[in-house]
Length: 449
Image (cartoon, rainbow, N blue to C red):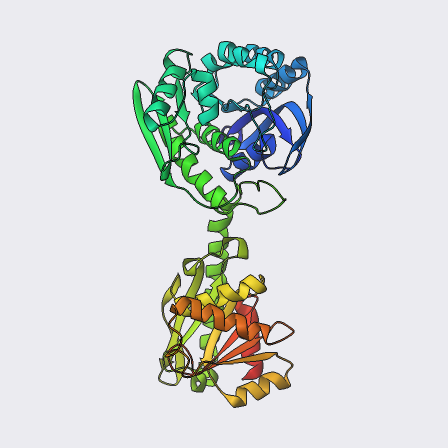
C-alpha cells in the first residue's frame, strides 16, 4: 500500500537560527505541530541567540536552488514558504527555481531580526519586489516590512489595508496580510486583502515570548495550505496557533524568548494524560472506600492533577474530581473535569511555583492520628493555622490560599508531603496530601491509612 499520498509536505526556504527560535528551526517545529513533513532549503547560516545576531554566512545561490529542486523533484512539495533571503542573488535563484513548480508560496519578507539586526540587504529589496512577490500566494509582512514594500507610512488599520492592497494590486501578489502587532491597537489585528476583499483576524494581546513569531505564523499558514485548507481558513488556524505559541513561550535565554510551537499539540496530549491518570487514581481510591470513609471531610474530598508547569497557569488547567461518602464507601460525583476544584487547584498551582514537579493533591479531614502515622513513615508535614485571621485580613480568597500554601512550604527546609490547615478556608480543618502524580498521592494515602 502506498501511503505517500497521505503525507503532506511543506518546504521552508529560509535561514538557520542557531538559537532555534526563528528561521528554519521554527518552521520545521511548526510543520510538525500540524502533522506535515518539513523540507528545507537553507539560504543562510546565522550565529544568533535570543539577544543578537553575531554572524551571517550566505549559502551560494546555486546550492539554494539545488536544495529546492532536490526535494521538489523526488518528494514533492504541497506548499512552500520563504523566510530570510539575504541577497539579490539568492532571491533571483529562488524565484527562478520556484517558478518551475506549481505549489502555493507564502512569502514572509524577513528584513530585520527580533534583535534589530538586518537580515535583508538594502539592495535586495528591489529584487524581492520584482522577482518573488509576484509569485506569492500570500505575503505576510509586519508593519515595518509592509511600509517598506508598499512605500506608505502605516499608523492606523486603514493604512494597513491600503498597504495590503498595494502589495496585491501593484506588486502582483495574490494576497497580502499585514500583521497588526505594531499598530498600537487594543487587540492584535491582522488585515488580509484577498480576492478584492478585506478580512480582519483579531486576537487579544498576550504576555509571552515573541522570537520567531513571524516565521511560525507564516509556517502555520503554509502547513495548513499543504493540508488542503483554503487561504482564509489556513490564516484563521495560524492566528490561533501563534497566539497560543506566544502565551506559552519557552522562557529561555536573556533576550527575546522564542515562541512555543509545541503548545499546539502538547496541551491536548497532556490534558488527555492528566485525565486518564486521575480517572484511574479515583477508581483506585473508590476501592479503598471503607478505609478512607472516616477521613472524608464534610464538604467531600477533592482530588486534583495539574498540567505540566509550563501549561498550568490557572484553575482551568487543573483537572479535578469530587469524591463523597456513599453508605459504607466513597464515590466520585460526576466525571473528572478541568477547573472542577478551584480551592485545591489554586493550592497545587502555588505549590508548583516552588516545586514544579508536584502537580497533584487530595484533601482529607484533619486527623492527629494520621499525622502521627505520616511522620512515623517519614513524610514531611507542615501546618498553618488561620483561625480568626479572615476577619482581620480582607484579601481575595485566591490570594489567601496561595499565601497560606507558600507560608506552609517555607516553614520547612524541605518539600512537604502534607500541609495541614487548622481553621481552613471553609471552616473545617483539613490535611492536604501532595504528590507528583495522582498515583504518588494515592501511595501516600495508603501508607498513612
